[in-house]
Amino acid sequence: MTFPPDAAAGGCACLPRPPDMDPGFDIPAAPPALAFVLRYQDRWFGMEKRVAFEAPDVAAALAMMEHEPIGGWAELSLDGAIVCRRGGEPGGAADYWVAD
Image 1 (tube, rainbow, N blue to C red):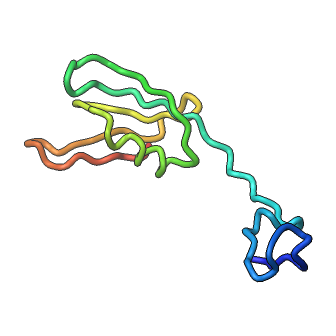
Image 2: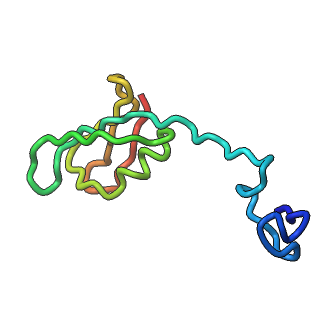
């Protein structure tokens, strides 16, 4: 944080100013979001669903999909190419994602 040179600069010189109010401060640009498509079997209705969404990377995309009602299969694609597929162990063991 920086301190204003005097009270005429916008306030008490004893209080710090947030960096974005500093004239020399540049807010960094956010990384471009990637467009993902999740295709999966709905756990409750058994039909195929597709959900398009944006995320900064694959890890964030997987975290965003955590609450979707994914049934027996699923695949995540980026720009039409499959990035990973959902797998599972027989007998109801924990599910996992396999990178293609």
